[in-house]
Image (cartoon, rainbow, N blue to C red; front, side):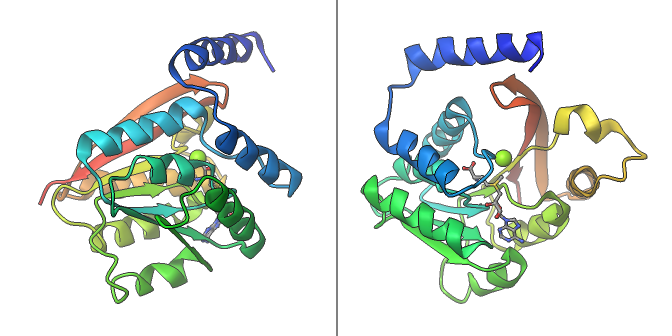
Length: 224
Ligand SMILES: C[S@@+](CC[C@H](N)C(=O)[O-])C[C@H]1O[C@@H](n2cnc3c(N)ncnc32)[C@H](O)[C@@H]1O
Ligand SMILES: [Mg+2]
């Protein structure tokens, strides 16, 4: 923990205390995930609220999340849905999915959430036939080496106007290292290069600092 990280965390705490009410369901979702041995790879509260605000501004009614973990971001997403809205969340690890389902049910959101277990490359091709596509908003937050494949699927499962939000694309600045042999870094680099070439997308990347360290996200919209 360096000085910068201490400052970033204090600033997150300052704003969260003022802007984000304490929430027992989100807190218990995190503590249950930690107790189950999951890594704390969830979005921060301010990032969860950012996704919720974007969804509400966009009036997103159907959301695809790739990467559930303990359901922390899923709760933020489900709460931002209007009446009749739905989030489909994909998670490879059945134990994680089970913990997430419990946290989501405790928060009274199980009628808005379906968690599908399995590798996303196997479950993504099943979604259209189930009548879930097109999605209004797609949150990509799973194994970063697969981001190029997730982009392909996001486009297949989208419509003009679909928003794509991809987390953790800065990776403490490592994204600029062209010689990186880190599979996560390579995944986000290839993902970004594909977005750059994709005429159907208009996108930007935003760097972030905070309690989760130095990272960032890509925000894109399908424009045709
Ligand atoms: C960064 S965490 C998700 C965090 C969550 N979105 C949040 O903010 O609370 C990534 C999750 O993706 C899952 N995952 C990894 N590889 C996957 C795959 N191939 N298919 C589906 N899920 C996968 C991991 O098990 C992990 O739970
Ligand atoms: Mg993330």
